[in-house]
Length: 338
Ligand code: KG4
Ligand code: ZN
Image (cartoon, rainbow, N blue to C red; front, top):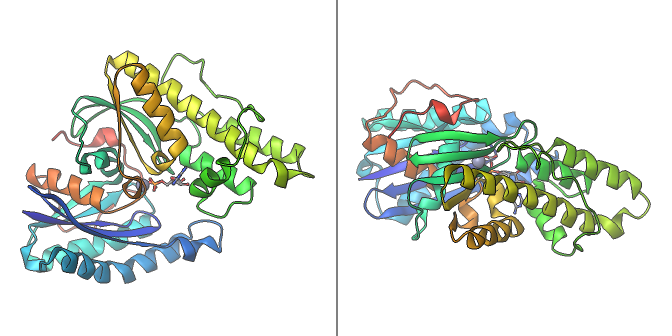
């Protein structure tokens, strides 16, 4: 059985085909980054209109890559939330109309569940139960995952998400949107320890995060160095990344201890960052456990992760009714068990 997945929650239009036996068969992605970059961030209305234009051509590309036709599909999965309402509606409408026209089910998928299970697209898959660290543009969550669909939130950010902190810091350093990848490149030339930024909430005995203070500390550093900012930018980027890595490591360690688990799954856009990846790999080696990540292109938004979860939910009979209904805010804990 083969399902088509459509992702359109923010600034990337993705389409993928997933087979329940063979796994991922084909995927195609169109990024809107150049379109939004001139405005310094995502313009929701432009995003929605662009998704509408891109979905059908991408579906054709994916079908061609998979050497199959629409009639060979068993269902169509789409991102139903969380995300930008207009962007979500674009994908939901196209998916529902296509599924209705083909007389096959449509399957609403939670974007963060897609991210969370994206490392299962790789050959070496994590085994349940595990602790998941979800670090994206809008979310920072530590979750105990006993099986697909069973998500116990252990901690979350009380203010900015990790990706948001990367983006805001990047903006302060004059790095164009989206800031995360640019900040990673800049930090590669920075010196360790020149800037020692705060590790927020590291002493709190829980698994919650706070990144707003870190961003303010970076702001203060840029103001203090306004005359020689160019010379210290890379050091600031390095200092920020180290503070972020220390905080994530500390909270993961706590969550693993609390749950007595030795498997850590790291997902979401920020998990593409090599400094963060190596720090969490080191942590897991030190406790004789293992860290799992998706390949870098599946850390950020894509449809492969939506098609994979779509297949799980389709097989569990959790299908939609062609009503175009999306959830811009949607807690993972609301999902049904699988
Ligand atoms: O998961 P994602 O693609 O979208 C959401 O669901 O939010 O995450 C996007 C976030 C952005 O904040 C982006 O700057 C960050 O992930 N990001 C990175 C890197 N690549 C993407 N942050 C740090 N280093 C990267 N290499
Ligand atoms: Zn995402």
